[in-house]
Length: 126
Image (cartoon, rainbow, N blue to C red; front, side, top):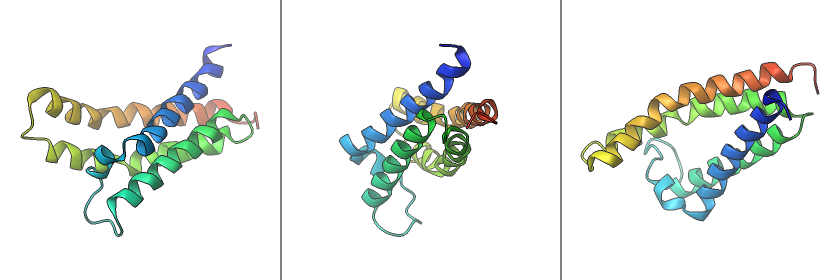
């Protein structure tokens, strides 16, 4: 399996793991939901977990890979406010937790670029 064939599957695995975590341990995710969103934090936690699982499934299938990759890029941009909220909320926590929260912020950029690269590599293969 070539690197370009592994890349979408690795991204799918990352999203599937994150999506499953939203259901297995929702409480930490609930705390990152911006208060300005309507509804309950748990509903947003489950919705984002379901979205991650759906994106993972879409990335795993060559026929839907390009659309799923583009949607994943938009998803990574869309969840950025939750990461900002987490970094703000954790600003007074012990250094390792604060570093983890702050470290999540720049990670969104390579995730968006990775998803876009998967989409680009999937053009014409559906």
